[in-house]
Image (spheres, rainbow, N blue to C red):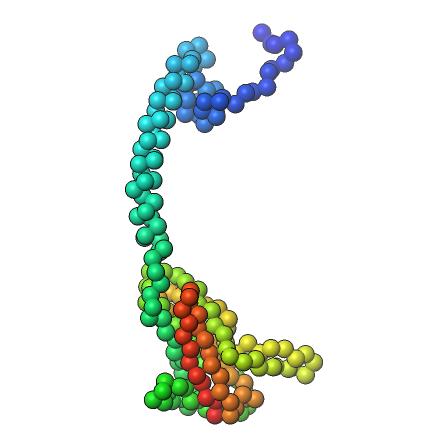
Length: 192
């Protein structure tokens, strides 16, 4: 028999919120139109209460362990950076740890920056900066020259970035900074 005024709007159950687990809900696979009743709702509440207790106990124990394992511990204090010479430009490091490089007078000279965080299981961001600005022009536009790529990410505790010295930078010095969390390391490069 059809209702005289159409089907009433569906009301969401205030106990199970139509999650399909309560047997007294039409969305449950165990719903029986003739036998499902409020006793199924009470059984649902009893099961849910037991699950909630287990979940709360799991969270009490699991959250502190999770926070420790995810890495809310302190950053190591032995972060360091160095410059690598993979293209065999003349380079030496003096007793003070300062780099002396001979660059090309005709084209950009590329070196690689290496940052070591000593956190091999973490992928983390390293940001890079320099102590002074350099201008670059293509004849139409003058812009700030990005000497070192501004950011990189670590893999197995090591991050790399490229640094490119322009011929106009000959006979000058630059300080390159690596930043990791609250830690900063720097190198001095004398460009000859």
